[in-house]
Length: 134
Image (cartoon, rainbow, N blue to C red; front, side, top):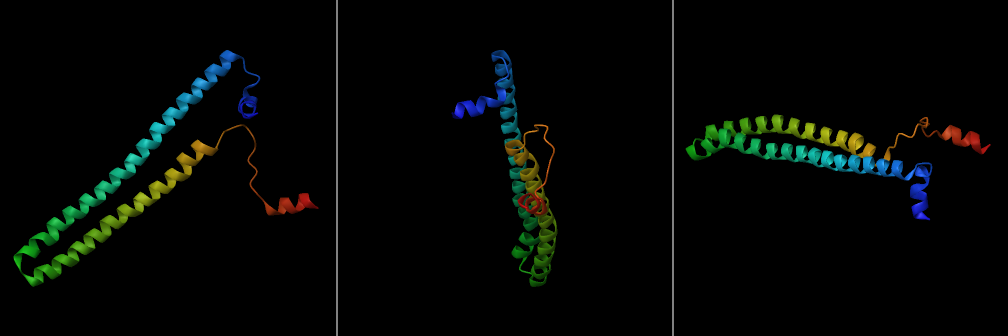
């Protein structure tokens, strides 16, 4: 029963056409898997850059002032560190969140649930539901 439902769209195909179609689907799946992995690696790279930038900002603003013993330099250095880190890393986090959201919506959703079968798109409308119910 399940096998018949899976093969139902392909019943008109000859065995050789079915084999070619199956091979194309397999290649598309493999390429999609590589593409999704590369996309996650891009997000991982942004995460690593975030951590390294925080370390660089700390090294150049606070580390020298903490070892100097100058309280005024520590005070100023802290606020410089805070301002630079907040501005740059917050913008990076916003960019990372936006990229991840776009990736999830467009890449993964379309890979898993969208099949261009040639049907016209009809969005859900509660008015149409009530019209059909009458």
